[in-house]
Image (cartoon, rainbow, N blue to C red):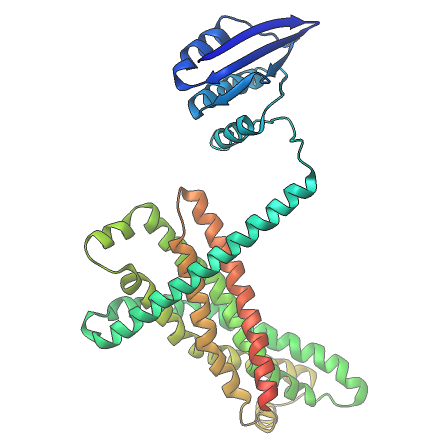
Length: 375
């Protein structure tokens, strides 16, 4: 059984009734039916789908295309009596059309929609977590294979990535760290001078920069700068089917693309963290010279007294873990890009946000662990 169409005018409103089974074979008839009738702005159009039992994607497209043409001509149109199955097909087709189409609100209660949304997000989070663990396992396997076959490892690619991640990041990391040092000394002196303990602002700067702020700022800059670049590069390689070409040529994308990037981050991050610490102290030294009239020699003498056995090494220990986490998330999101260029932007944003969030979470875990260890 096919479909049938009818048109009835009722008090300035045109009611179009569509019934039966709307399939691809009915599209020419439906198009001819729409073309045979003219619609005006003074009329409103109601599409009654109460008698429509089933519809396929071709029929849905033809119907929604007609709706979009009316909307372009500023003719008001609405749907009525849309069944659940018909609505599902229309929603799917509408989501792939350039025009947004408003279907009548569902009769299902809002709390059911909320539960459905929570379930969908929970499933997506579980699926993403599982995929990330799987991706981590592939990276670990690729790393040990590289140790067993060092001649096949791409040293040139690793060196290039170290230059981009490490040396090219020095200006922005140094500037931010220097300014943070200036701000910390200025704020701490303003508070401690009430107690006559301005000199201890140097201790505050030294401990906070070397233990937390230096490495945390470096990780945030690297996640925003290098992490986003990794995701975008891998994403466009996926869209251009370069990754598929590597697989066809029996090349492992994990070994060729992912591993050099993660290792470059793990090598560069401790050096960047050390550089960030020194620039933060240098900014504090300049500010102390003006506020406290401490010479550089006196400032760094106070720094030496403030440094404990683990003060410097805590930040350095965190660095490779932060680097591995940022690189893993950035490359993982890059390899998940699909569809079009819009997907690159979406996954690049997710890469930066997730990278910074997970770095802060890991830093909190490190702080708790070091506190229990008494260091």
